[in-house]
Length: 313
Image (tube, rainbow, N blue to C red; front, side, top):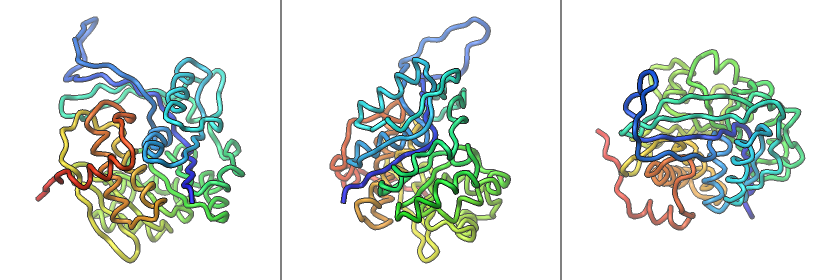
């Protein structure tokens, strides 16, 4: 069966600048090696890698009627993503970020939430979601758990596999805000800092177990150079990251989510799905932006089979 994924939520237009070690003072200027732009966000960024890996992808959310929105949608469409479910909001700018990339690949961000904050469950394409095999909610905290639940609950009832990734840093208040949506998630795909902040747990494993108590089915946690931890109520295992020369960490979490969900859609084990996610993230990390890399499923599998992994003591 064809895997059809609706990636619903945050659509962001990123501008990346590298390398940046300091912002010039006053009217100063600095020469850099590269400036580029592209689609990003927990919905749009995940959509790109899913499409590269062979899933049928439809993206849903909100962007402005500005030129940035035009460009973002055209770049998504160039990857074969159906953007007909993305709404255009007059008078509100498309969400955008400027990312000064440090030499080590890390980056702060200057961000405008923009049209992402205008999207609500009333905008969600309920009938289209029910016909999909998967719905991935990127940034459910933008609308809150109660509202996210009104999208996820009928999707689950229709037999759609549900997943979500987060944008916000972890905080107990965010967990309370998200709580009503958690019982309707088959998969939650946060990073380690988010889990620890959400739950205030003394260990990552205990933090994940606290999420199980709130109804989440499986939690796949990205851990940067330490790879990923995948847990269900009955099993737990780690998958290492791949050793690559990191240019930019932007979009690596979204790439992991896409690889993991593509593996699930192909019927692969959770471990093999996490390996696919780590491999996709490793390829994206080697260039600038969430859309870096000309690869398909076969290329990612070949990379995973032949690349060295990071040895973390």
